[in-house]
Amino acid sequence: MTGSEVPHSFRLAYVPGVTPSKWVRIWNERLPDVPLTLVPVSPIEACGVLRAGGADAGFVRLPVDRDDLSAIPLYTETTVVVVPKDHLVAAAEEVSTEDLADEIVFHPLDDTLDWEQLPGKPAIERPETTADAIELVAAGVGVLVVPQSLARLHHRKDLTYRPVSDAPASRVALSWPQEETTDLVEEFIGIVRGRTVNSTRGRTPTPPQPKAKRKRPDAGTGGGAGAGAQRKSGAGKSSSGKPAGKNPRGASGGPKGGKGAKGGKGGRPGRRP
Image (tube, rainbow, N blue to C red; front, side):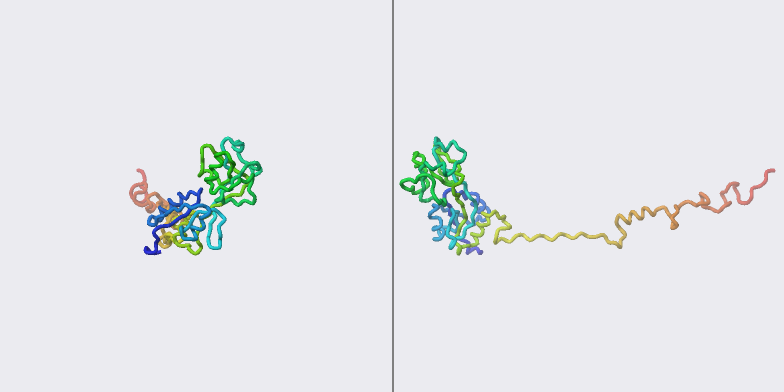
């Protein structure tokens, strides 16, 4: 991608409950010349924003239409029920949908849980948003089943939440238009998937350096420990293998009876008078 082709920024949409700060930080470190702009969207309008070109990619809640959108599932959230702190459910560590049979369970229009059958009793009207449903829970009208991140997002001091063991779970995915899989989208996919700088698609990794070859000792030089040991073991011996430096017939190595032998001068010793 040339400098003239680099867009002014990368637009990232995200639905409530998703915290993209970690990925944004990595993006800013790797591509400081391409600002990342966050685009908050509701779960209902998220896919429409991507199709209309309002964002290059986005964190959405599944399901999405795979006919024109690509999606990489990232994680699955725990589903919880939000209740007032003095509610009976607050005394339990975990509940099931059967435990909510006598409760009014709100079903907001922006709910993304894939219910086959909503537990409890339905409210007269469906709240427009999750935030509106939270207000009704705080008023003591009913309870709300949501992904845990939304319970944290709308946290109030007078409310608490508990896991629902058999409720459907919400899955968060990274999505983008299939026909707009640009280089920058590929860069962001690499960041989300945890690729390093060298392994990110589109970047050329540093080629491995060849290892230096070891030089072998030259056999013709006679060097080395073996040769030294051989020279040492052969010192002080003659070609016959006997120790050298001493004459077996005399210490001086001279002829027998020569000058210096017992009796002083050469010849036979004289008789005593």
